[in-house]
Image 1 (cartoon, one colour):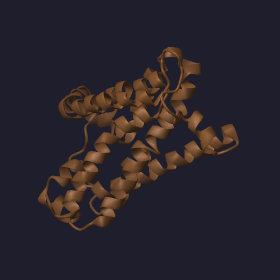
Image 2: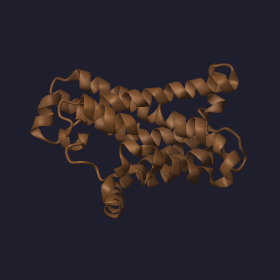
Image 3: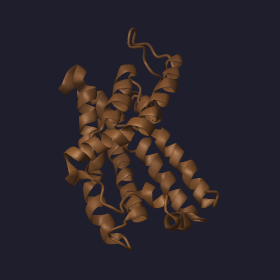
Image 4: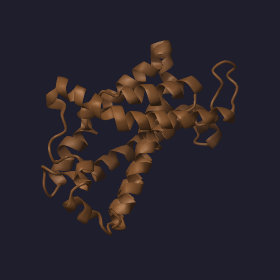
Length: 235
């Protein structure tokens, strides 16, 4: 992802200093590759890709009670406060954490002109998006493989259930740290406190990858609706 984000995307962009949509496309290919990696190792480990085996190996079944270990769909109700807390963190605290991180390590700050969100706030970016259903489709694929089939399936589905052997009860911390270092393609977000507390911890606690998937997907859903409005010319 670091190679794709820092080398390939600027090389393919019309303006290397503003590799907005090109960078999104290139990084999406990396996210799709993560899904391929998960499928490969799962097939190698189990010898099958039947849902019954996949569900258990990737913690995609119902959450388990931390006390009894029994499956219970009622525990999915904990997703409601989790999503609320994640939204509050992203809207109120996430930016502050990011600024603290880049103030300590200024060389990790996002280069000017690289922010896709900032581009979408400009008249130029909004004009580019109006009627651009292909860009909306690209963002949908990116979001799908980012928070469902790519990052989450790799880190919380494949890796986290197997990290207990090496890290014991601190496996969720190690998973969050690894998830942070993985973000070489956007080092301004490497201080992944949210990834550790809101994705890894609840996934480990309930032994259910859906907690990380749903918590991680909130931002993607928000941006999808935002981009739909821009494509329709409503913004």
